[in-house]
Length: 488
Image (cartoon, rainbow, N blue to C red; front, side, top):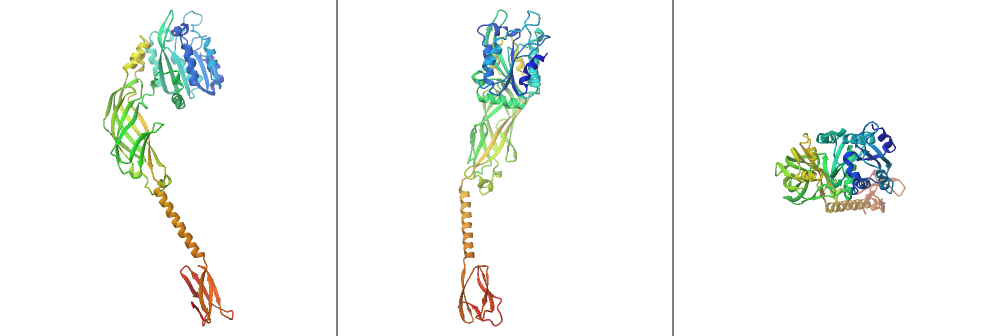
């Protein structure tokens, strides 16, 4: 069934990163026959926006596979060149028309699950990448009229399939008409395969390239238990010497003066729902901070949240313990090494939502009703029963700002020690004059600290030894009867 698809994709299978599935079953007939249809133009622009030079792509048409009519069927398998894929994609789509069943005038049926499964298992060979689907969301294999049940099966594939780590849906307005059917809207799905695919999708969304083509907010299908909320600090109280801000990467930064000693900080947050199109109808809240090797509970001003609509925020008060006992002292090696800059302690704040209940927002239901009138589509956005908790992790970095005073003081002390050492060395190395009298004759000798010099009488006989130290000179090894003394 998938032989033609696999064979056409083989040349691009090794470096493949993205598969684009374009529905051409009978349900899509007005998208192909209406002269005002922008369907093919939309597909082209999304592919151009989603790919970059060096990427590999497969473009395929899909309906439902039958003997003699494989589905999906590859239209293009290529590596994206420097000038982009627009020309190649346009040429591949130009001849695409509504598919018919083999040996019949009946229009082909649709099997969304079959198409996505083939893209993951055959085209991507279960390797990381992105799978895109352009569809009117009518999933009816063998012209099965139970489209609601078929849609739920497709949705279970998304939620229960372990290969799909992230899934988004873009509901778009596209009114088209034909003698057979009319439609108001179109759905564009994107499925990120494995963690690397999820990172690739996140990177694409951050780049803003896709948003230039699709301006609608994507509806999240998966995951529904991660990053469902966002914490934004509003103000900080009772923490002299501590200030909070957000970094460009989205982490929370706490700048702490070296002398700050407040054991805790009262922080007022805005708790924002980031899981469009779901309203968090209710959930219990707990929070913890993990910093400097400490794992501590954060006291919250409320134990739960309710009726939090997507994109909306609610106030949340909290009291967070600060690891002042774990901060390095101003004379520590860490502080001296960070003098003039900041000593950074990485950590995180984790907010846990339990007993979570999600429901589709009314605004989204109304939009779906307008785009897909009479379609039971909103029902398939019902979150799976097992998704009853979620957590949000806010990266946190504590930056202790050390001045250069201690470093300057230490530098001065080191210089003083060096000067003293230099003076001592000079004192040790400088020859000293030593006055002595040998057999009534005054003599002057030059001697360095730590040296020993023999002393001879007029006849040339050794009569003593002069020993010089830092403290002075002494006579040693005196011969009996020798007339030798220090001084004049």
